[in-house]
Length: 275
Image (cartoon, rainbow, N blue to C red; front, side):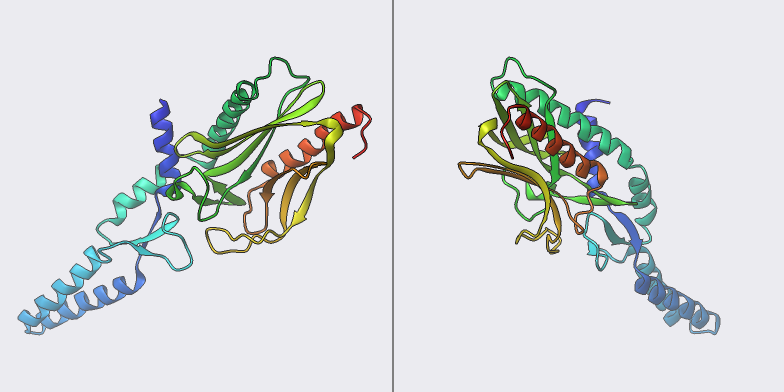
């Protein structure tokens, strides 16, 4: 599969909705067809044909425009007409599975890790880099088209199309970091940010539960968020929201944050600087 094919497959995973037939339209259309046939059988052929034709039109062609299913975003589910339903269902069922999305996310994260070494100008590092990732799901994400900020339901979580990615590289005297916003649909990393923190300047590194004031694109409050944060003596803070009850990003993303804390603390303690 070419890169273009992969991008199209990811786009379809996040944007092709589950088709839903509109129950009221089916009931009204079916009743009109039934009454029209009864009228035609009883001798009122003209009115019967009109009623049956109107009912058939309702069944086959309505809704004629995009209509959202209550409580679900347009990319998750949409009402479609009976005529369009078979093709819409085939499109929905032919999408890639969530496991493929996870695989492609891991491949993108590996590319970002590789890019971080060049962006930070590092020749040698002491250990493998740490990569922390958290979903971005707000109305505006710097550097990313808002139409690409999407999520889809999976059995035990949500899968996201946009992420904040932080890569930490360990040198013999400092912790270098590379942070970007990843658009999985477009396959691009934007809003690059780099920096270097001396181990002796680390004040704290931890995961904690916080409640930021921002709201999600869905309108939900971001309460009880599991957050990775690293603070320095100069007041600099690197922060990534890993998960929250409203995000339901999954245990794999949460475990990255805990692993990063353990590894960074180990390096800081090695240099005998208490945190």
